Image 1 (tube, each protein chain N blue to C red):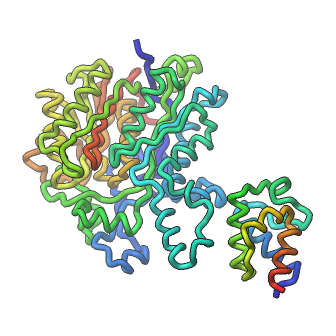
Image 2 (cartoon, each protein chain N blue to C red):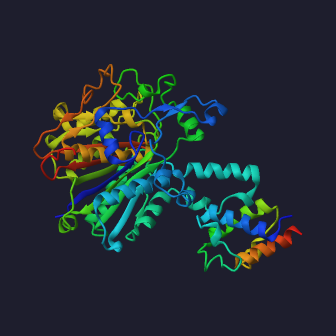
Length: 81
Length: 419
């Protein structure tokens, strides 16, 4: 079980790997599309990498609800519980 | 009168140099890009051929990690070469609706396709990357170059095996002559030093098996040639309508005077022993260039170093040029670069353009005992000086499937000394 801080740090690493964005730019209130400029293909790559890293399932229909980094952190935390 | 098309930019990433100046210096010196492969897969799959000609400079030296992640290696090479050619052309402010791309590949994104297949089998469909399709598609290099340059007049991908790179120049010439574009980024890219193509080309006995001496394995015209050496990389040429180039005072390397493409319709892989399709391609390229056989001073031959391939090309050259073929000096640069498949025609066109520009033909290495059935004047040892007058050179490329492509490059000015 990872804490929210650990999940955020892990996500930031995945986002950095995929897009080159600095990990510090990946903050809870940031929107994946509007703030971080992440397109749908990158988003799917991030989702799949997050599934592996945190050992959770993120259903495709759930991905559209993950608008902000905070949404993703909460979902992953909940899925791990 | 058709629009004249000139060449104003050159780019390359190859086994004998990661950029055009390095490649050209080495091509004049005569070096081998072939080396033993130390990849674990060579041992793992017990490949019968254990060497190849890799690019000297990995694409990661030019591309960022994030850029590279979204591109198959073939596309990475294409973008590296196209960026160099674009910079070299000095083009900046242009109408991007009048800029097109014709970028070839022989095989396409074979690394991406087979990596994804491994992922599917080992980890399941969820782990197959969403970028797999755009990375493996054969139009990937053309599309990436179009995106990179903002080229909006169309992005084309000729796929004609080892004739692809030369066919790209044919398409580029037509795009400008027909008025559909003013500038075309033309080229070819290949990245197939992967165990599957290595095994498959070896299975058809196309590759040299000189495992103990890779540097001497690619030996076009030599009596002991035993196959080609797999290479990789990309070449790129900026083609430009002459009036467009003159208006901006561009440096002009030469004229893309004529091109042609024919098909053998003879056999899926074997060349027509009489070289009829190649002969027609040579004659058609000269006709297209409004040139005579006597205008030709130099040929960059396809000459892959296979036992069956090198002779019909000679037959075709003699049929197309007549006795004048004895006055033509021939370079077989695959002796140095290996065979870059769909990129070879583009890289060899770059070398042909430079030969015309500097009036210097690059050398053929590893020719120890010339096949008596191929009595061509081969440039060996030191580069050959070409006449100072206006000159024309040809570049031949032939591909599995019976594809023949020829381009004719004409000088546009006096000899330019090397810097």
